[in-house]
Amino acid sequence: MTPHKGIEMAKAVLDQLNLVVADIEKSAAFYRRLGVEVPASDPGPDGKPFHVNANPGGEFSFDLDSAFFAGIWNKAWKGRSDLAGRVVVGFSVDTREAVDAMYADIVAAGYKGLQPPFDAFWGARYAIVEDPDGIAVGLMSPSDPTRRSWPPEGWPG
Image (cartoon, rainbow, N blue to C red; front, top):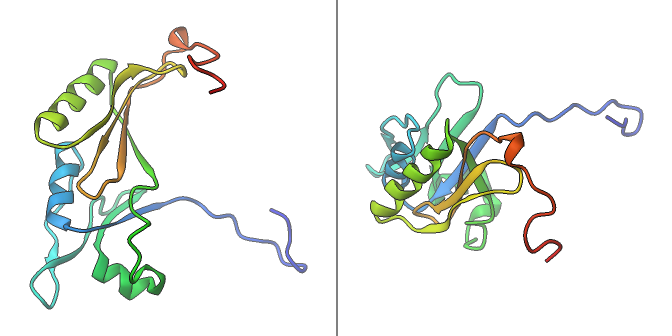
């Protein structure tokens, strides 16, 4: 890292993904369907769930928070509706066939499919579904070097 005013800057390490969601129970059901172990949320003072850590004790923290709760720890969130859906949360699956099966299961359960499974140019099988808040969720198999192709169809646009 480049020093700033004579001080060595610390290195940032990605260790948390925090999604601010409209309905924690709906989002928890979606991510449970993908196989994420999401415990029940403790109710807040109003009796409604406000936060759940979906990977307690893991190396990577995956949290679901209500918009109300996010407004408490991030004042900039209040009144913002333009922040949802600007990320793709990636999940790996064991096989190419698992991408197809998981996509079919999620869509059959009533969730929106954004990108049906396809053989991606980087060698993986890949699909994208949408969670209840419009966040894109990628499903990707391991990359097979024998299936890579370059340039991808339609490149450069």
